[in-house]
Image (cartoon, rainbow, N blue to C red; front, side, top):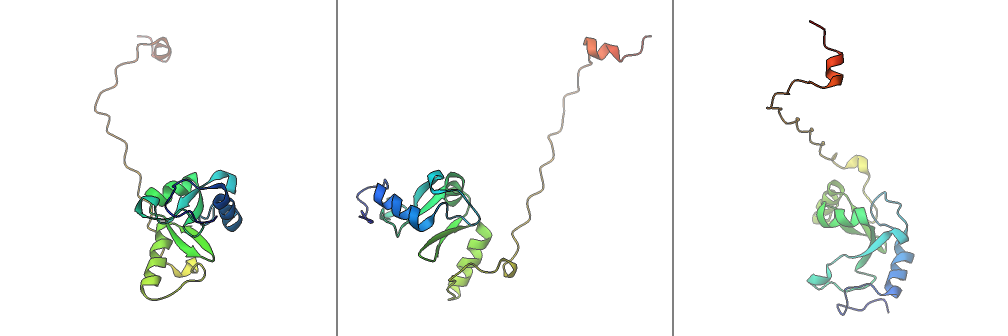
Length: 146
């Protein structure tokens, strides 16, 4: 059985084995985590009516699973399964699909807009408290004798 519908949220062993054979590990772009280090993910969330099936499943390592849920990564159809793309590639793929294009493979990264530059680090907080004088023995060693 490779599709149990919405009867259960957990992934039966047969579906997990099929996902392992199809995906071979984490489906995120550039990730090489093997199947043993992945979780099965519902592409259409189970709570939203997504079935527990091979067609609606993808293997993701813990890091990329979190990125899909909270980091802006998106799962897009790729071959017979799915691929997880970072936000800038997912946006380009979404724009191409909105223009009627179908992408049987990933777009050439050189044709995509560059990712946004990283934010500059925030300055350290201002030290508003004056430092007390150092009366320790170590501090006294370097002090000149009056």
